[in-house]
Length: 395
Ligand SMILES: *Cc1c(COP(=O)(O)O)cnc(C)c1O
Image 1: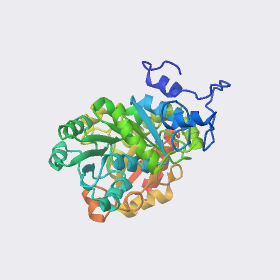
Image 2 (image 1 turned 90 degrees about the vertical axis):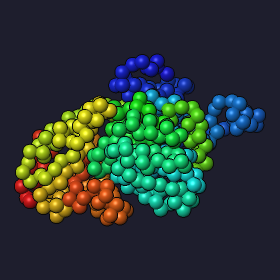
Image 3 (image 1 turned 90 degrees about the horizontal axis):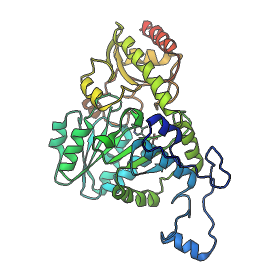
Image 4 (image 1 turned 30 degrees about the vertical axis):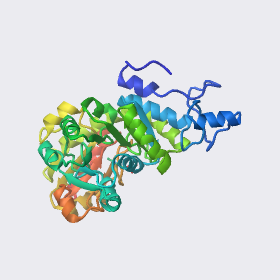
């Protein structure tokens, strides 16, 4: 493994994660597409199971290709270890399972990724987990939601799809004061733009389906722990619940990850231009983008993020119906959910990604019927702008 600990982020993105090929020295990591690993003797098998000898046993418990990806992402987030999962939701539910038990309480961002909230309300509640989803953009509200049995504060910043920000440092302080941990879903920012461990977070999760893989061809997730202690709490849960990753999937994500820096940079550059274009357009009622001075938390954005990212939400004159006209007529962005790919994606959260929430909860969380969400990709900026301008003229 190259010594890159003190190198720049771009160098880490390029070289992080040890290459598991010790036999031939292949420059690209091999895909160890095997469910199990043979032992040289019965004693060796026993020693591996007993943890007395390093080495692989069975892919749900560990695999060299999966480990290469885990090491790479742990390095980028500066954590002590990472665990790759079959999907972003497998990462979310594994963390819930590891830290919440009957009678435990969690405080979460009200407009988190829909299923991250719904799974608590519908499934974990069946096992006696208590919860409050609140507007974490205001640390005072987080403070008031804390209870003696609160074990976890779970935030997403920027939140999806309202682009509201949460102060990571303030939430870490509140969580720790109450003996709880802070979990941050860093999917929207990636370690290129936001590093929650530096601001006090304990666990980070990513849907690698999004920007980390970035090629719209894999569903994947990852959990990164700040300390060995937290890592050792999460790993057995993942291994026994079984939401683990597949070696081929790992190889694809590692391949996508190598261009993370330049993809995020280009998408962000496009997003800045589009947000400015939308904001001055007479048919656009409002735009939410952390890079605009009109964003109510523009100062926090500058403080805790290294850039505004590539996600824009906006509302057009004429509400939901006019939003539909845009989505049905765009030619450059693809009309699809998901985000963080090399291509732009446009969608309608109230009827798509967040349709699982009740109308009242949607309204409370600021997910209005007219909100259109745009994940900006790496196309030629002018093409995106011209396309949106043409669609806005149709309403
Ligand atoms: C997509 C997403 C998830 C869930 O990830 P999957 O890979 O779809 O399971 C979680 N959090 C955020 C912010 C997401 O965008």
